[in-house]
Image (tube, chains in turn brown, red):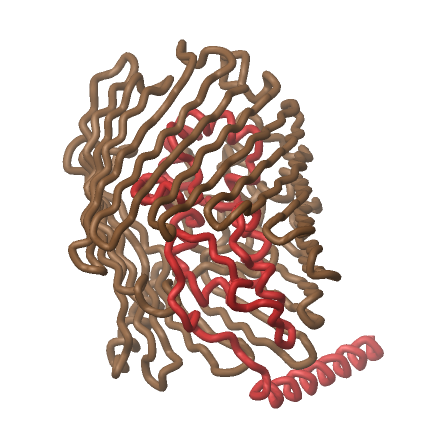
Length: 438
Length: 158
């Protein structure tokens, strides 16, 4: 049934678009990537990797009366040597493809096809229909319905654990620019029974908040509840304060109950650390300060609490920009101090230092970049004390829209004793240099 | 039972009337433009306040709240959850889907190896590191990968 639905949606989208494509604005984004790599796996034969990948995005605006548009995006890959991932040497994905009618008033629009829905607590990919509009007196409403986009079947199961249809929406109230209250929910048809995985139908309801009583202070976040598992799913809130121009200080509180938040994602139930009744927390803060137009610094801290143990991560970054932003660079350091429970079995420590630095130079003609990242483990992992990877990239704009570039990276890491990779990249992007810069 | 039916009928009628009245007034409500009217610099952390200083119309949130500071970039999910229509004036959906999608071909940091200045997850050897990071905060995996169950995960997580 779902396949029929997908076929109908796609056929209608393409047929409609092609029949009314008069005076349309067409923009194309493509990236052709040819990966070249050799992977030496400890205790196994060396693998030669030669994956060719094509990303394609197409946007056709100003169709019909000027308010209709078509948006498509997806990718396909063929392995020209050893399989780069898993068993299949070809793969692909139709990420989204929808027709949108955008009304001139009230931020109203309607979409038909495959799309992502981001509304309050809702974050889903569907094949179906969505619509939204502002309403008078600060109210707003959005709704969606359609077929669930399924993934690969779970191992030992006859499905991916998801129901077939899904619907939901969000109602909002805004007062000036200082307050927004949202109520949202989603309802998925009954999920199929699974043999060896834990799953539940994906059903959530919740609310979201934006409150800025003063231009220096903003509180935003969301809470959700799963009526299916009768459990709170998530509380996630961010308080940000801007006491000075260029200075932002923020605090974050996140709490998740596995039973409510992750139970509809059946794959998580295979993780040894998954406990349906667990309540986990991440509390932290971050701050950034733009010292001048050329120099910005940021620092962050997070404290993780799980039944596995506790962990702290802290660090700082600096960003630099010179020559009218054509030279950019940055460096940073972070340390993760984690309990033994987070360590990779059978090792005893999960703590590590992370160091990173990068530099890039862009001109209208050529562009070049250097990026290095290193991990220093507190205790040896797979008999290695550290891991690192460095990448050099060089490219040239053949035309303003067409660019050819190549990357070479080399790294040493605990599992693959060393890894050398190359990447040839041909990009054609007709939209970056127009207004909006999408 | 009759009283319940009456109450539901009254509420439904009131809702319908409100909806009709709201629709009638929709023509007076402004919309955001489909695209940002000016070209924006690539590779710069956009400061909306450079042009939109203290501008606020109707129920629009202050533009300054959307300055792309490092804190904003790390916390962008809070903004996107309620203002994706504002995001879409400058960003295509595919900009989000480089990371947030049910099926990723390559790591975003590899796809954009020529843009190390962009905030991309999973740099370096994430094959090893995900065994630690996934235990630390599985909710953070779910935010980008959703209920993916994709092939690459299933290969090991059986």
